[in-house]
Image (cartoon, rainbow, N blue to C red; front, side, top):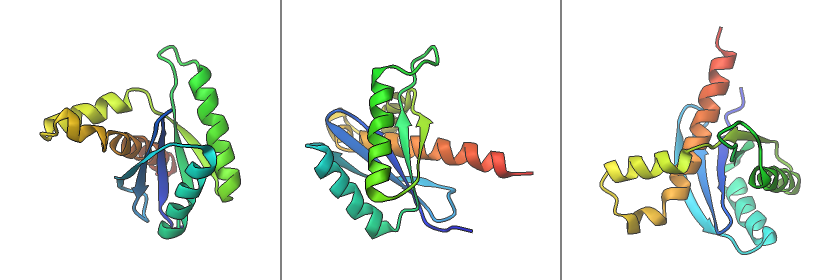
Length: 144
C-alpha cells in the first residue's frame, strides 16, 4: 500500500487553497493558502510542498456547472492541473468542487470565524473538502 499523502488543490484566479491527506487517505486537513502570481511561481511553491510532504498524487477541484457541464473555468482548471502534474511528475485527478467554498464558509461561520479571519483560510478549507470527497468516493469504490 502507498502511504504517501495526497494534495488537494482549490484553484482560484487570485489564490490557491491547498490541503493534505494523511498517509492512509482517510482524513484531509487544510494546509495553506497561496497568493498566485504566475504559473511558474505557483508550480515552484507547490513543488516545495510536494517535496516536503512527499506527495504521491494531486487532486484538483473542478468547477462543474449546476447542469453538469464543464465551462471555461473547468477547462482552465484541467489545463492548469495537467501542466502542474507534468511539471512535478505526479499523477493528477479531478474532483467536482461544486459548492465547496459555500460549505467551507458555512462550517467556518459555525465555528465562530469572522469574515475577516475566514478570508485567509477559506480556500484551504475548500481544498480539504475537495480532497475529502475524492478520498471518500474512491475508498467506497475499493470496498467489497
